[in-house]
Length: 95
Image (cartoon, rainbow, N blue to C red; front, top):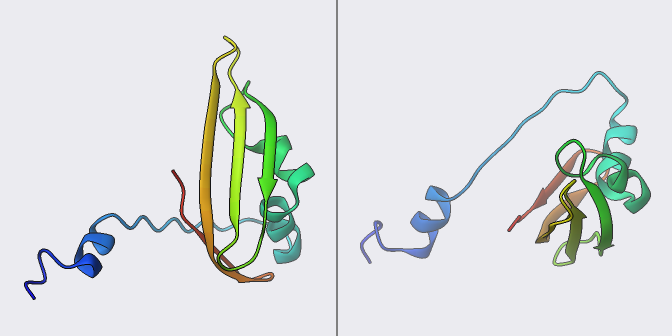
């Protein structure tokens, strides 16, 4: 199979890896990403309010988040958790 048309090649072209270093204990950063009440406090752009979230934090689990802009428009995001290694690694899709 030609690597330019394989699924693996397509996935690599669409992969985005973001690495951030926080001056905080790892377990607190992990909680900020995995505890719904904490996620709701920071998710989305400044001024947006998280109105709904559902998180099944395990490999293969899904998340759905809805946020409302200052103008009242609702924006939904969703994804699938690929890897969950507390407190070291959290890998998920995002659409």
